Length: 210
Image 1 (tube, rainbow, N blue to C red):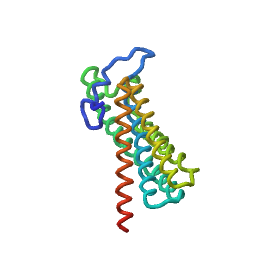
Image 2 (cartoon, rainbow, N blue to C red; image 1 turned 120 degrees about the vertical axis):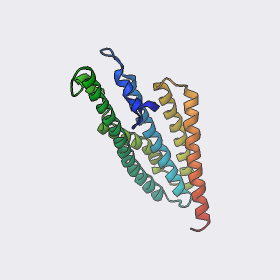
Image 3 (cartoon, one colour; image 1 turned 90 degrees about the vertical axis):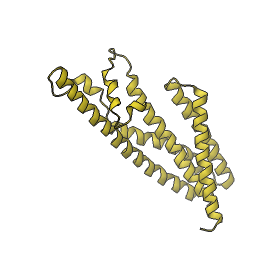
Image 4 (tube, one colour; image 1 turned 45 degrees about the horizontal axis):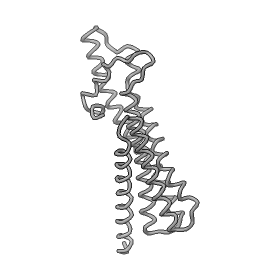
């Protein structure tokens, strides 16, 4: 995965892997999996933390929902732009290397159709990242939308967010053929810490009367 990051010349190496007709390009699947899981995880943790932070100082459901919605829109846009820039940089590197390789080996100026199909698509990557972020962000928004009781609303948001973190961690591990328990634990601990820190610091600021 580290070799796929933008700006890393070693990201060119996967283009040399031959894939049989009808086979699965695991390199590309790993890229999409990374973007989807990170997007959903970020959406879930970011929006849940923001809603709990606001819930630390305001008890009305409207404030939590509006804050969560604003966080969802801003986060989705940020994810899309970040992924677009990152993948476009990777695309430029791979295209340049492909041209150099073809000129060196075949005297051609560009890659053939098969090679071009394997190139990353920054527009698709941006859309996938934004969509996955929204999917993760919707979880706490829906869970809190219809609960008027303040304490119950906080508890439901925390419980649903933790459950979703475990599910996302298990799904990522299953698709990536990684240890499921370890992945679930990482997701759960990281998300719980983010929510606890956001709630705690906001609560302290509220108590200080800022």
